Image (tube, rainbow over the protein chains, first blue to last red):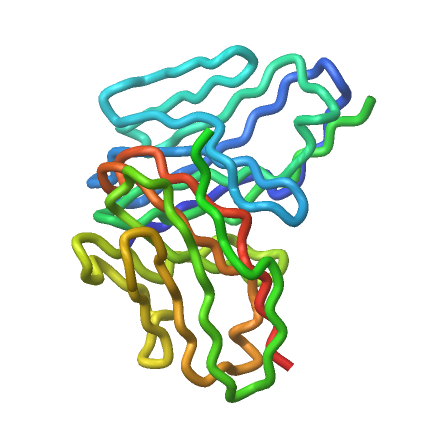
Length: 110
Length: 114
């Protein structure tokens, strides 16, 4: 099955700084890599995703990169704001399942 | 914006009792999923469901678990005889075309087994 490793587990930044979260996956058959943001007491919310035929995707302050050869994908958040504070999960698909990383708690200090 | 809705938001049950967690997926979605998240841990896959049958299930999804789509809108997870270790947040999700397209999650049901 798929195995997804995510780091760091916690990340503290100052407002306005950039934040980068990295994930690796094990199964080369995975072809879809979403990122979810989870706020306290809520369900995971899809914020951006990337498919294996694309190397980079950007949506305003959020970008995701994918290196298929190395089986790495990363989330980049620029100009962080306090409301970006949450737990972020990467995931990779295999068949009809998503395997999640363990999550990164991002804390943005004003 | 369409969303996945789950009820109840919180369920407390005694060990050994049966519980049914309910979900209403997004109306034009065809693929449905249950995931769970033990407090402070990652989200874990339980089961996927398509065309009125289970597509895949994880090792967690043993004989005490079952899923059903009793009508055109609801998708349920039944836990037959709850154990303390079943305490977790249970998330329902749905997607339009399988797990290589966007999957949208509900707000979850917090199950507490006492």
